[in-house]
Image: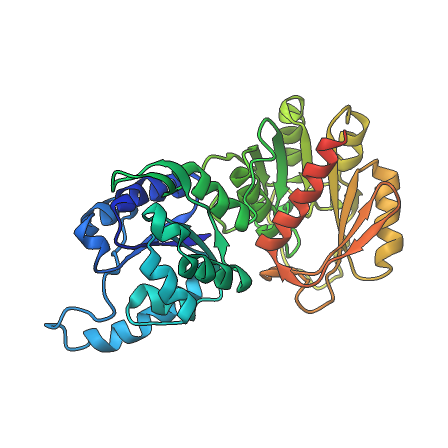
Length: 401
């Protein structure tokens, strides 16, 4: 997820550097936008060093570049579209007034109007400025537009006065950003084993049976779980995705390899999410040599692969078990049957024939089938958003286990 940190001209501007580091430690990609006044308190180089990215300091580029104005004129739109949240810390009384009035006379104020992302504001100012009716009216207008205000603290201020107006603690602001983005630490202490991708069952040394799974759902779950504080073990079939940093990554090829990898690590786990598309059948007698083309029909004898989900259920104990069902017909009947047969706590089912819900796409449309008999139809959403929604279900199951 991407966050833009807007820094305005107040003494507390130096604390924005700590905020940038906090957000990075939460796994967020951060870029910084500074007003001209902010640069009087902190040098842009500080933020460039922290983020490894260019710090945006003006609406227009360097005059020596012939294309600078053209590039800068559209940059605020590019930033607005790529971020998931904009947090302004510190936000001065002047900047709050400009926000409330819809003024766009520099890059940061223009970004506020151009973005559809979440906006979080952490004000910092003199206590009299904070208590002034104009400031309070501006805050009310911003709240009415959906802007989240992180209230300032009460204490000694740079001006020598004591009272409200001190920038909220960096951790409080950072937590507000994470909560707004749906990033919670409600899975701390949990160990999630997540499977992803297809398996490949060898026919001969050059051929195999497999399926169209891309692994995107399982990898999205792993990334989301890490952001929520879980320890993650990702057991993955062959895919082209890069494994998430900080996950224990276990690459496998066949259903049997996946089975062994899971049961070696099962004692460590509290939650298992079987998002992998494990082959149901494999060649009974794989050929040691490449099968040559002939004119006669070729029969391939198949045998069932191990039913990993059922085996895990037999050793379930206090674990939470989530199964996935990719169906082409009778979705509810098949998913409920799987839920009962496999002893899962939750089955996530999708009809892969629906547009936006099949293999190797970035979105999904699923129905959740719960152990208590209830079901929940979810609309089409990105696999990242779905991963967050599924982990909400997991967190609720863990709280009541």
